[in-house]
Image (cartoon, rainbow, N blue to C red; front, side, top):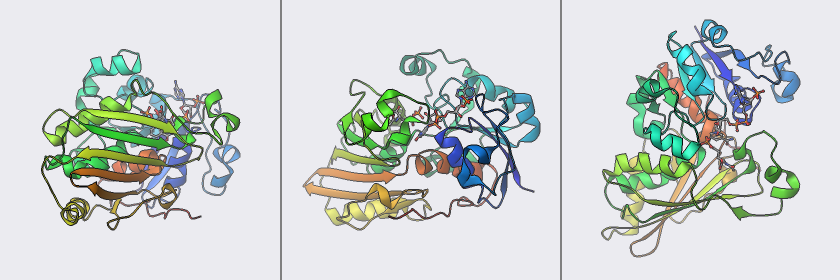
Length: 346
Ligand SMILES: NC(=O)C1=CN([C@@H]2O[C@H](COP(=O)(O)OP(=O)(O)OC[C@H]3O[C@@H](n4cnc5c(N)ncnc54)[C@H](OP(=O)(O)O)[C@@H]3O)[C@@H](O)[C@H]2O)C=CC1
Ligand SMILES: CC(=O)N[C@@H](CCC(=O)OP(=O)(O)O)C(=O)O
């Protein structure tokens, strides 16, 4: 029996990426996909790359219909949508994976501050599991509701974790200088994301505070066992996919570079989707484009000064690939089922 999958928000970039990945999944089948704007349109009429793989049309997001047709529902929607619709599915025994941010921040007051809306599903928020398999695999297996991490948080956490978990970094002085491709902003039309605005240009944004900062600090603080303070600066780069995180920290006690490399390799040994590169490497976003993988390199340019480079595809390990990884854990499937696609080069 295949897992029956529903997708709310099927016309966005993470929605169509879920469709691409799930089309090759041996143990899952998409049975419902929603869009308010495209209800009635065939999926392959909107996304020709899916021709021959789906005999399905978009429908209005109706929780009762989804509950009948699905074992799990992905929310590939802006924040504020899942918190209203997911409870109706969860109460009917359907598992939910939210690719948006509704269930990531543990503290509803913090959510209200960063997202500008009250949290309307506090009971379910208390039961949600943060879906980074590299830290919470066993909890995810037992979950009903998974809060899939943000794209910047995935690249940043995976880069800092090996050092923070061992108490080896000054946790109050971390810096994440992170660049994203334009698909990170979604498919909805906005002037700053037009080709002539974002192309051939490069800029930082949200320096005064980005909503991924509290998410990263929340999770890293758990694993560091102390409060983590992060300077987080996102940038928009003129590429379609990819996140490149340059992460800076100071060692709290000396460590030689070979030890550092060994620490990263040991931390991620056996992790199917984290690749620690040889010492001295400079991973490029094109090495992960289309693949569910985070490639990491750790450097120590001067004694005590740490630079970690971490790259992911924002739509895959940063969103839909990680969401399918979480689905596999929820249903006891092989964690890598459907996630074997290699990165696309050139
Ligand atoms: N893009 C990325 O790289 C990443 C995105 N995310 C998060 O994933 C989520 C989806 O992102 P993305 O795919 O980029 O977004 P898009 O803007 O590309 O797509 C949003 C989708 O949600 C649907 N939608 C919008 N409002 C509602 C609503 N009120 N009720 C039901 N459906 C709605 C839209 O269809 P319609 O309006 O027709 O219903 C559309 O299909 C967001 O929360 C985003 O922050 C997370 C990690 C990475
Ligand atoms: C380039 C770009 O605009 N990126 C988005 C991040 C998208 C994302 O992952 O946001 P969620 O937390 O809502 O999932 C941004 O900075 O808002």
